[in-house]
Length: 73
Image 1 (cartoon, rainbow, N blue to C red):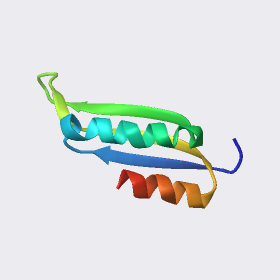
Image 2: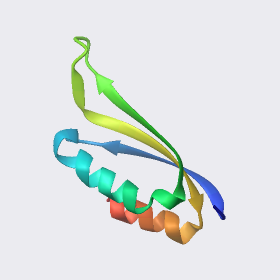
Image 3: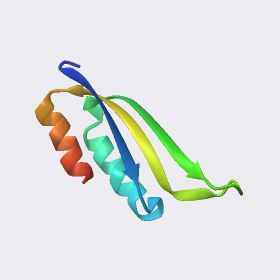
Image 4: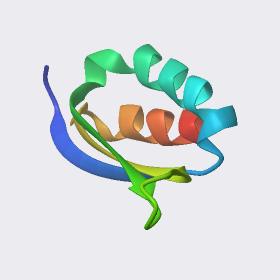
């Protein structure tokens, strides 16, 4: 991979309805993703929250970073 390394953190709400859409975007841009870390929230009863956070390390040019952000929006 060439280009710059960029860290991107995203917050996914309503994971039940949005997880597949987010996965499709990440798959489409998979060649630009060097590292992907997914974290999900839990309440005190160890029940998964409908929210999650993802941290991505992108290895691509600024234009490609903008494209990833737009597609995730």
